[in-house]
Image (cartoon, rainbow, N blue to C red; front, side, top):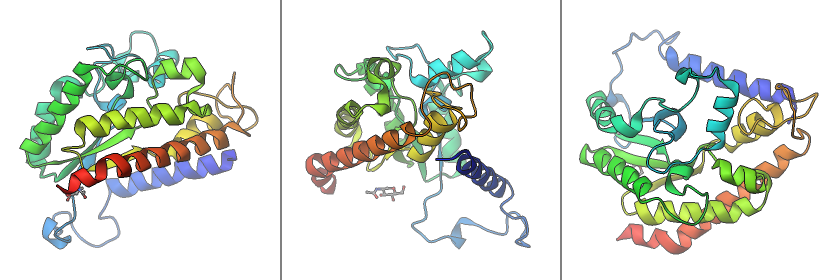
Amino acid sequence: MRPLRAVALLLLAAAAAAATATPWAGSGQEPGSISKDDFPGDFSFGASTSAYQWEGAAAEDGRTPSVWDTFAHAHAHAGDDSVNGDVAADGYHKYKEDIKLMKETGLDSYRFSISWSRLIPKGRGEVNPKGVGYYNNLINELLDHGIQPHATIFQYDLPQILEDEYGGWLNPQIIDDFTAYADVCFREFGDRVTNWTTLNEPNALVSVGYDAGIGPPGRCSKPFGFADCSCGDSVNEPYVVAHNCLLAHSSAVSLYRRKYQVLSFH
Ligand SMILES: *[C@@H]1O[C@H](CO)[C@@H](O)[C@H](O)[C@H]1NC(C)=O
């Protein structure tokens, strides 16, 4: 991907954000003249967050750092928690209050992402019971309030240990490790979560993390990268990562269909 493409993507995202902020501009309608009844009955109003933006509790109950912790801390002013996710929106402690607010807002659904390094602190193998407990509580609290949980399995926060061990998404080993992680998510939460997203915006992972280099793991090369590009290869790595993302997605979906989907009809 060329830098121009990345700029266009960012601009699109900015335009979308602006459109969301002023949904009525130019439509001639006043705020309030539209209600839920104007939408199809099965339209689901929701909100979403990602684990690193929302949870905080970065070093609590067994969670280990993800590539986002590393990146935010490397680029932040020491001691300024407003520029990292150490505390974030403190959802790990305040999820009950937040769900109460969601209920008051009238949301039908809530999409959150699962922190891989909270659930499986070493990236693979042993599952952290406190991680399972936290997501169980969150999901049950949502259901108790009549809000549908939608879970995203991966939203950019790869366990740092897998990045260090074999280069994370650059290595096809990620396919097996992601599938095993997804398997734990389906097994532990799939009795209550029926809407799953495998990878959030893999295009952004690829362009931000491996072409422009302005997000974790911050890899890029000149003249394409926007960062200092001390490591990476913007000509080749984005394609390798995109390829591994597609294979990991397809592997997790096959597993779900083979092992779990039938159960959800009971
Ligand atoms: C998915 O989410 C929608 C909206 O929240 C909900 O109506 C539906 O029952 C969920 N499950 C499936 C399998 O679609």
